[in-house]
Image 1 (cartoon, rainbow, N blue to C red):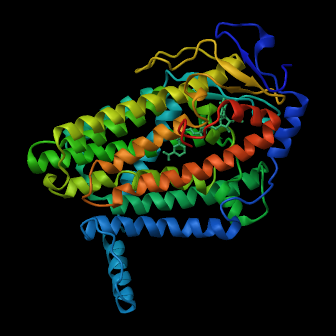
Image 2 (image 1 turned 135 degrees about the vertical axis):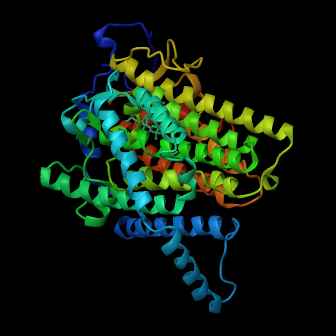
Image 3 (image 1 turned 90 degrees about the vertical axis):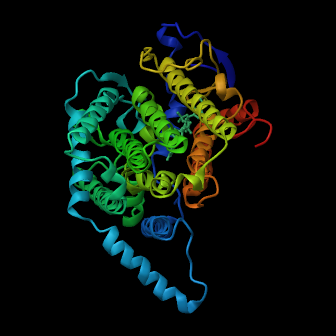
Length: 475
Ligand code: NDP
């Protein structure tokens, strides 16, 4: 089917079976090779060990700088100062980031609440995922009920706060304690899933190195009933927490000053846009790399449970405890910031939906889902693409005609703004954008290498059509 490396066009309305993607024998062979452990990534076992221990330490350090040293990056000025400073920080961790009862109740209760909602909430939109090579190209169904769950969570939180049962301001006040419990769950679930997958006899792409396999994961599509745990953890935990941290920051400012600063409102809007995008476009997530390729290991689990929620919105934590005069901008600067955020969001939302819907269209499983907001150019009519010998198609229309990662550029712009909203008051909120650009460049390298193996000459052909990786004309 199809000619290798040709650019083709099809209509979105087409219902002819033969017009849908069909994996060729050559494609099956390449998929088999890609499903074997080949080379170590992330510096191999020692590299992943360093990441697994280094990241929690870095998170504690940044939290301590923000919380106790006025947002300054503290360091010893001489060797003699090193030990006292370390002991001082350790003292802060022991007292203000201990795993107290409040944090166990709130974090664990939130996880259980989200799991129960995902399992029992009706009105889930049923989306068929991409064919999974390791399951003999079987497709999995995804019960996309995040939208109804997020509104239920919002109403529950508002009720609990209003009736003084659970004050939302307590989330920021207990940031350190919650972070520790989140890290515990990140570690625990990673090891538990590794052993559970081994016992079930279903590991895939294993290297044989224990620590490396815990880090990368052993299972691809872990499920409890109708809940896909990997998708659940990606959507329901991190983005909810960053949004509720922002709401908590708003309430704290309102209690302290009687108003909410435009900066805090900006963060609430920004985190809401991200959370809402994941929920209203949940059916587009099964087509992303995290779902069909990345396994559910420490890399993804720890980051979803602890990394994203407790290192992406340092700006909110800073603003909740510092006078607004430290991060006040002119009206025109606010206009630029809000406009840039909304533009970046628009490009991110539509580029993600263009690619995901293109994949659904070519698989013959696309139905238009009317969730809010549906933005113009979210679906491409008559898309052009490169037909590969593998069987898959590579989109060359919409945002995807300009660069190979338009979604990364837009996503990173938002990440930068999440830090820039405090201006130069403290460097710590910029951690997210610095970390994220490293992740995206590394991820891009891993992804392109995989695509090159998967599509061979057709990938080169695609790269010659879509020349730029990130920004057209520049890089
Ligand atoms: P990508 O767009 O990078 O997906 C990559 C895969 O899509 C490729 O492996 C390939 O898979 C397929 N693909 C690539 N180009 C094309 C094309 N032109 N046409 C058709 N298929 C194509 O998305 P990701 O899944 O990596 O990321 C999704 C989003 O998640 C991004 O916006 C990213 O920024 C965000 N993200 C956010 C993080 C955070 O912490 N905030 C962390 C990580 C990601 P194949 O051909 O095998 O189908």
